[in-house]
Length: 250
Image (tube, rainbow, N blue to C red):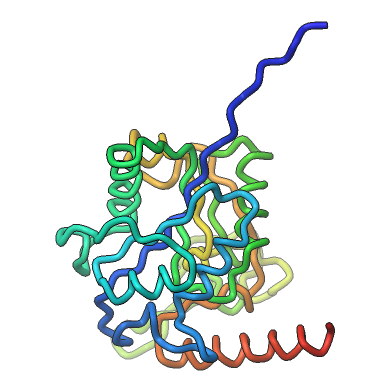
């Protein structure tokens, strides 16, 4: 009987990007939500994943680094100044983290999972199911999405022109745009709450999105993305309600 080759396990990095600057909500990434810093929910979800080999925090702010460490996530470096401004991209932050770990820890990730702290309703099973999707579909990238409500479909949107409303989409359509049942199902990134990509795509192709991009569909509630003060209030209500339901069910 021929022995099958043994493949080393994949190294999967969970990267939590959390810079200090925030114009809309001061120190948004550690703003209190239901008695905990916003960042804490992503730390908990990442540490509970069965897929992630390692979880680190990338931040330019020592106070945020301390919050991350207090919730079990390492912050092995302080992000360089050029990656701390409003124009710093998530891609550049991911590339920096991958290269830093390879250079300083001799640890090279096969897959990177970007986990933004602004998605506090995303849980461990979402991360794992997204990575299952990546592997089962032999994809380069998996991104979490949410179905677009029919009333936000581009085929139903309007815009102002000379004080009057005009249809945004004016090309002929093979369906009735006013019949919700005939509209095609569209998807939008929900933050994204989970973005998993092979490290080679990020480093060699200079993008998160490889040739084969698979969707991981999440529901509207778990897709809350914190951008405004109202989003914080909504997230707090949802988290409090979820905890109450869990307590009643136990």
